[in-house]
Amino acid sequence: YSRNFQRLLKPFRISGGGGTVPVGDYRWNSFNTQYNAFVGRKASGSIGLDHGGYYDGTITTLDISPYLKPTSKLSFSPSYQSNRIVRPSLTFVTRRLNTQVNYSISQKWLTRTSVIVNSQDKSLTLNSRLNYIFRPGDDLFVVYSESRTYGDSSALRNRALIVKVTYSLDR
Image (cartoon, rainbow, N blue to C red):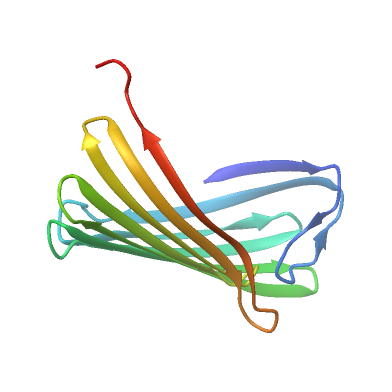
């Protein structure tokens, strides 16, 4: 249970067709419940449900986050979130899927890839990271990131290739 207060000094536009929340003071209560399974198993995860106010309306959120570790080197962590928002004369639903895959090639070579699909702003984001640990505390990271919109106005938003080296001078 939580009590919330927010004062909007400027109108707040909710992306994805949610309309605009007018200037004013907003008070609301929220209730949530969550179950977390023990992460030490090959299959675990969590599930959560929230319900409460949302400015001049209500929001109900469902979070489902399984965690699968089929081998000691490979893990999957997909998560799904759905929000149903009801406002005066407007009801809409947003969904987000975030899937992460981790693979350890060896103790020195690690990878992590995540794909995020967001229905509110119709975006698809890919982040892929290769991490080489050449000495404990010293790393080389190579990261590729790409963000696109999907649907009728499909377009590339951002693309980047980043190389980062961390090196400790106190040796």
